[in-house]
Length: 98
Image (cartoon, rainbow, N blue to C red; front, side):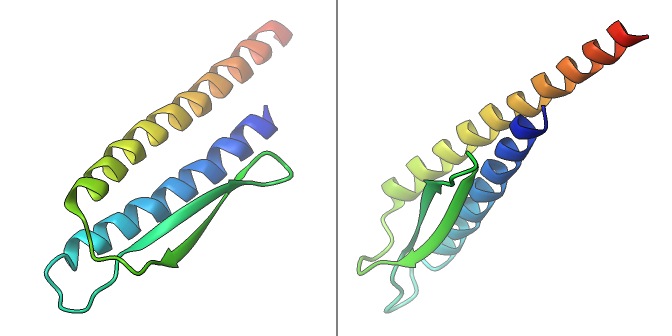
């Protein structure tokens, strides 16, 4: 159970970073000379997720940021569901032991 929680936790952190970058890009949509940042998420050796922020050469594109926001929502939902299921499984195991 701890592995599932650890993996989901790192993924939630990565999606939080990505949402922050998306918000920053949207906030600077009309800022002259602003270049959009992006987040690259990679799997770690332990099965978690690592997020790294890079600044690209492009201006902010609303369509790309909208897709990122929807992807962030879906990623967070999936990982929160994993945490919920791990919690339920732990509860069931403890109930069986009682």
